[in-house]
Every structure is written in structure tokens, then in C-alpha cells.
Image: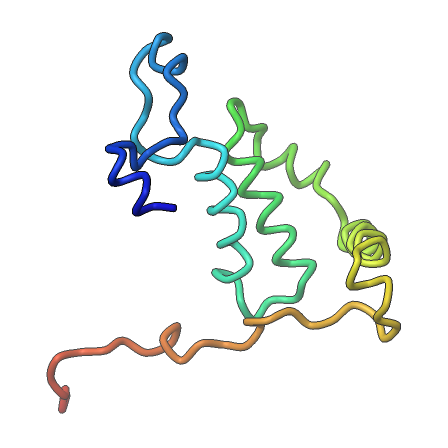
Length: 129
């Protein structure tokens, strides 16, 4: 399909001409996908923490990136508790397609171990200090 589009001189067929009428169209991904990628990256950046702590890190990131975030005192008073997060996650797991046929409970997700690179820095030469 892409070869045919290149032959036709239209490799980028996803743009609607009506979009350009409203102004310049950004060349990068849309903002929503940019935010989604950052949220998906949060659990990877917090490997080694319990699932609830990783979920709290996502909640805090979302709070800090709102238009007008509340103070830290407000966040401490109104943040979700560990028990509530665990309950919500269990409900979501039970309703998920994978949770429908797996009976042994919530699984440990991939990448929960500690990465060697998080504790060591590569250098070009060996240091004998």
C-alpha cells in the first residue's frame, strides 16, 4: 500500500485538507498521545516499587501536570489511600479480558525487577581511584 501511495505522490494520506484551513498543522504527534506515552512510561521508571506505589506515582504526575495543581498539603490530605487503589485495581482486573479467565489473582507485571543500569554508570575507561 505504501508503494502505491508513493507512486501516486501522496505518501501521507492521513491529513484532511480541511485541517489546514484552520491554521498550520503541527508536524509532531498530537498532544494526547504525547501525554499517554509519558503515563505509560511512569511504571517503567518506578520499577521495583509495589504496584500501588507505581499507581500513586502516576496520580501525582497527573496532578502536577494539571493547569492549576493544588498545594502539597492538599494532595497529602486528599490523595488516594493504598487500600482504595488496591480495591480499584482489583475491580479493573476482574473486569478485564485477561482477568476473566485467570483465577490466580492479580499478576506481577513485567519489568518489576531492578535494572543493573540504575545503580551503575558506564565509563569509557576503568577508574582505579
